[in-house]
Image 1: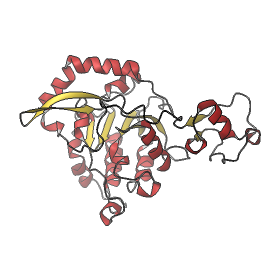
Image 2: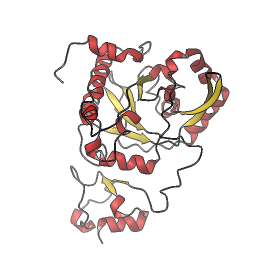
Image 3: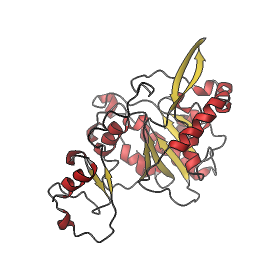
Image 4: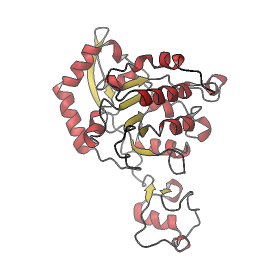
Length: 300
């Protein structure tokens, strides 16, 4: 039996959705490959990435974030409100419940503690604004990830559902092929929850990405060594000191999109602070572009 047909019979993941990681070094097995052709040693383990038939829409609920909503609030302008969010018993309870229910599948385990034990949570700005094809990746995406990987463990957290996130990551060649960087794990929108605040005297609620649920799972990471990159600062509401906002990426196939240099600048900043600061406590990431301008011009 063909390998992918056998996996389909065991998992209900159809062959066209299957991405097999760690089975054949350096490449994916062809669709027509049989199990016998692989000549696998006993006990060989691998990872199958794919959505089973019938599971495509079950993750969508009315309580999940609207990924088309670009409304934002600059959390750095409301430090007292952010402290109130952090001390709100409802949010503390939600973090505890989210931690208990979160089951993280490690693609690559975090590296042992070292001077470079920082973590980098990449979210919308690397993925949104582009169709799920490699040609629409933000300029410098892979160069950026390669540049920061010696200093940071990389995690991806997107406020889309897993079925769409999986497709983007594979087609952007961030998963499923050899790269000079590794992704620790991927989170979708399910661990996010709502917080409540006011703007212009009106009450509103928005979803957040609470890093505490990751820190609870991985104690080697904390507010002193984690940077959360996003193009919506409202997602920093429960960990605003770790937030670094960059511009959204849109219009991939326009001159403006092709000329986008955000990731090239961001890599300079991240490497700089990782090289010169023992921890990130007290660093105001809001001024990160000013820091880059003050650095010696690079060749990029």
